[in-house]
Length: 352
Image (cartoon, rainbow, N blue to C red; front, side, top):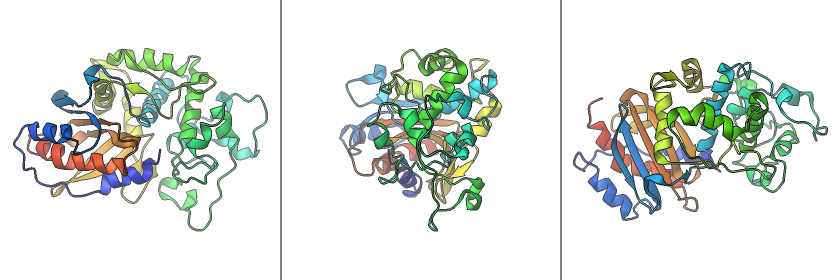
């Protein structure tokens, strides 16, 4: 889904200009509706748990299920934390091998495959040769979709080589060499299914979605019927807000601890580095967004097409942007321009 380069642009794009608009979002609505940012389908801004702006720019409206692609990965990380709290998994360092079906020996056998951990999958720093940003990679996700068994596709991959221009894990920040890999998170979904004894979609509904009031969810399925943890889950815009708000509130919703607070904190601290300016947690992007003379720290769920759900803790702020800009050039830059020109400058004027 080519997210690394795109989200780098999202983070580094520009210093956000001072707002020329008044303190409402009328100008933003007009600009988006006029197509200034191509196909933006919805924007929701919530501060201190209250919606301060919400608008839908397509015929689907609030009820529409929106495919935000790799935002799904972050939700898979939430489910890992719940499964650990329930004792279904021993922790982030648990080995995945006992939870991956093996009907035959893996191709490219190597004992290091048996030492892959859940944390390796959640930090995109596994040793298997898998890189969605490299069209020559054997593990590129587009190759995965051409075969029937997506988990076997991943487990059959060879071990990554480290030529001089690629940092080895020991020489990398946080001791992990990150390469964006959807197939690894797809496999994480299979690990969750085995560990919990439930279909991924059922476990997500029971343990995460229902406590948040999320009624409808549409999962992408593999040819063998595995819900795709790596992307394609469709949810309403308000559901995406609820998931982000859950983490802003330390994993609590309505007095109930849905995700353990310790897991929330662990998930949004750096475990690997995308670029010099972007860190990566447990399937969360960790960004610094320049707003005037300030840098606002954010943790975010991102998906191709410029889809993004960003959380700014210091401002008690959640921003959701959904799009269908999948065929646009540099769609994350389009979203960054929308946020920088129309949205965040107005929020900056509000008390926090």
